[in-house]
Amino acid sequence: MSTAFRWVAQARAGRARAGHLHTAHGVVPTPTFMPVGTVGTVKAMTMDAVRSTGAGIVLGNTYHLMLRPGAERVRAQGGLHRFMDWPGPILTDSGGFQVMSLGALRKLDQDGVTFNSHIDGSKHRLTPERSTDIQNALDATITMCFDECPALPAPTETIAQSMRLSMRWAARCREAFVPRPGYAQYGIIQGGTEPELRAESVRALTDIGFEGYAIGGLAVGEGQALMFATLDSTVPLIPQDHPRYLMGVGTPDDLLGAVERGVDMFDCVMPTRAGRTARAYTERGTLNLRNARHADDMRPISPHCDCLACSRHSRAYLHHLFRANEMLGPMLLTWHNIAYYQRLMRGIRAAIVEGTLDAHATWLRAQWAMDDW
Ligand SMILES: CNc1nc2cc3c(=O)[nH]c(N)nc3c(CC[C@H]3O[C@@H](OC)[C@H](OC)[C@@H]3OC)c2[nH]1
Ligand SMILES: [Zn+2]
Image (cartoon, rainbow, N blue to C red; front, side, top):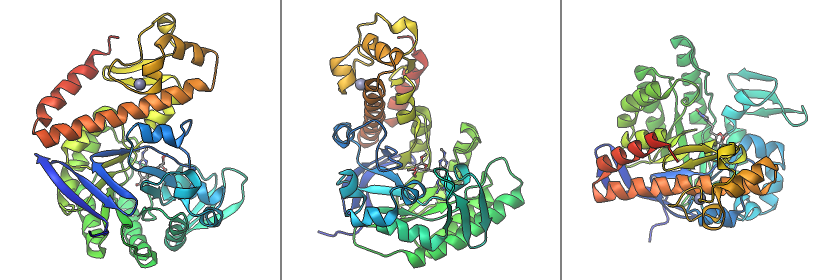
């Protein structure tokens, strides 16, 4: 039985695909939503709770983990899987995006980025090689290329220069990557919302050759229409037999539209962040559980959900917990939101396999429009 990292197709529905991602740490059905575990924890959830939602892959982050507790310390602890007690696949981002959005002061040059830690102001440097080495120390199942994600909108020439820098960095990342059976490195496609630049980026990355390809540089304020238009022009250029990962996306409606456009993997902080701010995702849109209208509502958040919040508690109880600022509130609601995202992806995946994706998509969109409960 081959232990090679690979994506195996199971069914297609138009450009949408269902399949299985085979990794050194297990097989994950796609399309899949990957809970964000930035600093080695899916915030407010135990790993048993994460497992109970059906999540397959969780994320870690080079930027955060190199600053605290330190990549070498995680290596000494046996890697991120042992450290956070998650035996399944872990995908780690390369840190480039976080440096741009978190590092207080930073200096970008052709060779890498120098920045001050947002934690204690200490000085650090990330290069394609260092980022790749850190992800190796973390024992990441899927390593992401070190790239530059430009803020949008930006002049075409700026986007082009930034993309070409990321492509040079991708080649250096590939050189630094230590291949192991069942492990992968993904190239990250850049190029803003310019089809020609995106096509140039795909060519550059497929010439180097990676086990998977991410669509980066989106979900940075361009809006859903431009994001979908960019997927329409970019995704068909990615080799059919490789997994496609759309970084930082998104709402349930974003996920559905991106799956319809051929994307297999997703990550987004929305369900976990919403869980900490009393916002519940449901089949009929979102609920703000701090709202007084929930104070006496004995119904579960969702009648279709088997999470701890929905199987044992009422909206009134969640409302109370958030009003009282009790930590159990974020714990239960994050669990619920991740469970909702996993249930959503399972339903979409089943529809692709059964050949009913169009009807399922219509039904989902109609339900989301209701938000009347
Ligand atoms: C929200 N919109 C959004 N657009 C993004 C675009 C890029 C990109 O072009 N390159 C890289 N390298 N990362 C990106 C990221 C960060 C995802 C990470 O951000 C972290 O979530 C906050 C998480 O880290 C555990 C996740 O790990 C993959 C994006 N996020
Ligand atoms: Zn629930």
